[in-house]
Length: 261
Image 1 (cartoon, rainbow, N blue to C red):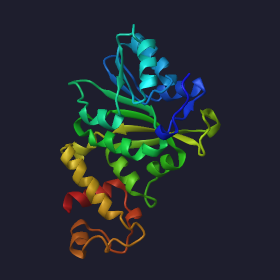
Image 2: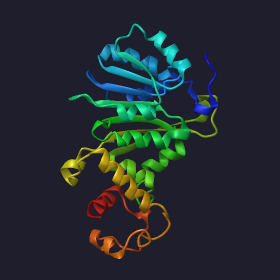
Image 3: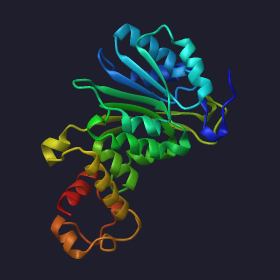
Image 4: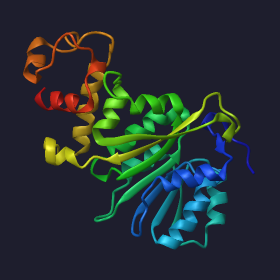
């Protein structure tokens, strides 16, 4: 099999039980669209392909490395439910449009160095956002994303605004080939249904982009008090104490603040 490319952050899983556990984390049913990010050697892909036939859903495996793309094409050429796509996932997701009345699920072992850009692109899908994701990322980043207030960060607030986030399990670095310097963490994202009902949010790409910019401003100096990035008038309007720091607010408080900003 082809050697991993360091410049693409390729570290491949070597334990089939992990693949089974990750796939089991998604509630996949007939008629879904399932997107796999970076299938590589096809460790997850093989199990998903069998499931796609048995449960009748469309499965898109998006692979940038042409070597693996061609190998996967040959492997699954006779499976009409499996679509192997040669593309950068950062380009694929913005162009993907969720079919009407379909539920979308995303699964992937993300290259650690582009975890943040990929998660951002998932959120920027807006109305086409997946209903569920199971993502294998660097353990430290996974723990940061699931952290609640008073340990909020830009990343945790941004992700938790749009998804309920659960830390599923840790994967020791020895379960990868080649062995990375850090352990992996698997998180599950479930799309929030209350944004429109409870907060009146119209989930558009414009909304996501503006909210993202608002949070960047707020967390630019996360250790400074709230009266540094915001005026007293802005804080009073949202009922937020100037003595708090960005990490003290949870996603609901940040979203309410933004809607009154």
